[in-house]
Amino acid sequence: MSVFRALRQAWETARRPDACNDDYVVGRPRKKQRRYRFVADREGPGTAARLGFCLCILVLVVSAGKLIAYIGDYHRLRQASQAMRNAYYEDQLVSPSPAPSALPAVTAQPESTGDPATTAAPTPTITPMSHLEKCSYPYNPYRTIDARFAKLRRQNADIIGWLKIDEMLDEAVVQRDNDYYLDRDYRGYHNVNGAIFLEQTCDLSTRPYTYLIYGHNMKSGAMFGCLRNYENLTFCRINPFITFDTLYEEGRYVVFAVATVSLDASSWRFVDFTKLHLSVVAYRQNALNALVQQSKYISRIGVLPQDQLLLLVTCVDDDAERRVVAARRIREGESEDELLRLSAKTNLR
Image 1 (cartoon, rainbow, N blue to C red):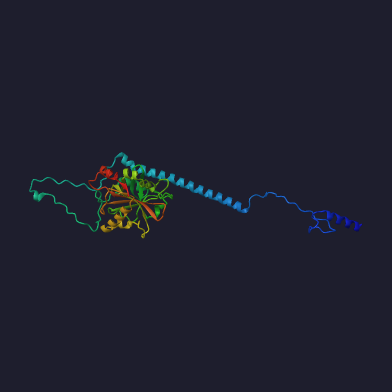
Image 2 (cartoon, rainbow, N blue to C red; image 1 turned 135 degrees about the vertical axis):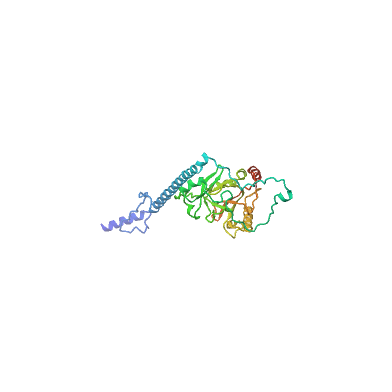
């Protein structure tokens, strides 16, 4: 039987085309080839995919939280600002205060029938100044706080002024160290919009020659976000006036320069604002010249070292630069109508 079986297997092997296959051995049945088929993975995404999905969800949640907080801060700021405006203008609605004056008016001299040679008023002699002397407030030598601010200062003693640009800005101004109000509103509550604040080194015990005021450049237009409008020539031509009232006096200013300057002292766009706080006329003149040269516009509004200056400063996209809107106090005898006509002749540099 064994011989017969062997012959039969040999015969079957000779007839198969794969007889020379290594996995076939005479005397042993050939192994069946395994057939495989693709089976889809039914276990779901792997660990990396799950982590990526969770990370995306986390980013969305955090972003949504920040957006909600930003919107909430903006609405709280609007409420606080409106409450301040109501308190500030309340007394003014009842008894309007007189329009602000630039400088004391000159009193007319009485007529005399005597010898004109001896009674005529002497002609003033203009002599170059090397230093600016400290002076008191012309209409308020005893520094009596304006009644409009007395009520506001009961809410926050840091309030020192009020800044207004027609149809664009109407906000209180505070003064403390320069970092405190970067992320606090006028009431001292945390708010990403911050507040508009005066340079901490500005001394209000005497009449300052320079007011340097800071505010955030908010994309919502809050704070000094509205100053980007001065990048438009048409807007700058028809909106040259700024009102800034302090505790001790009212002030009306006219814009003479709009510039984006560098904070890097080695840059050709650098302007040293600290020089404008000095009493040395030459230093102030050099700083003013640099500021006017950096201005985006050529303005017909002139400026002198002895002019009282108002500088509104805010950040831009580049952290090493600042946007500056520079104005000077309207001088005695100047007409706003005439200044408006001069402003209408402003051109791009």
